[in-house]
Image (cartoon, rainbow, N blue to C red; front, side):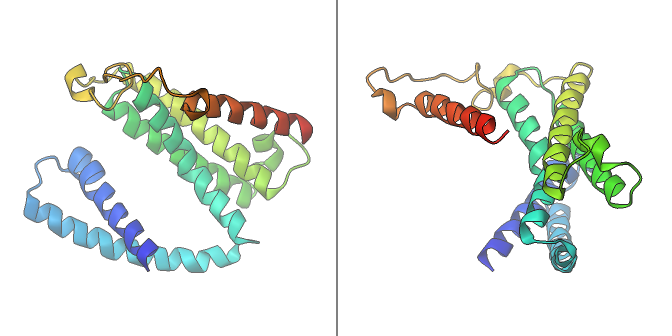
Length: 205
C-alpha cells in the first residue's frame, strides 16, 4: 500500500505540475490545480487496477516489468542524461523527445504483438526471445528520445543559464576533495563497474 500510495502521489504531481501546468494550462489557478490533482489520483488508481489484470497475460512478472521499463525508463534515461550534462537542452526538446521515445516504444511493442512487423526487424536477429525484444525496444526508444531531444532543442527557446545552476553539470560549483582515498571515489567504482560489464558481455556473448 505504501508503494502504491507513493506511485499514485508521484503520478498526480508529475501530471499536474510538470505536464498540465507547464504545457496544457499555464495560467491554471491553485484551486484548479488541486482539482486536477484529485482527478489524476482517481484516474491513476483506476489505471493501476486495470494494468494489474493486464499483467496476468504476460508469461512472468519479469517480462511485464521489462516491457514497462522499455516504455518508460529507457527514454527517461536519455532525457535525464541530456538534461544533466548539456546546457542548451530546452524544456520543449526534453518533453517532446520523451513523448516520442515513449510513444515509439509502445508502438514497437504493439507492432510486434499484433504481427504488424517481424520481431527480427526490431532485434536484428532471426533468433530472439521476448526478453531480447524488450532490450532492443528499450535501446531504440532511448536512441529516438536522445536524437529527438537534441534536434528539437536546436530550434526551441533555451532557458537562461542562471536558472540551470544546480541542475546542469558545468554551471554548478563543485567542491573537490583531493584527500579522499581512491576506493572512496565514485570514479573508481564507475570504472570498475564498466570493466566488469565488458568482461561479462564478452564471456556471455
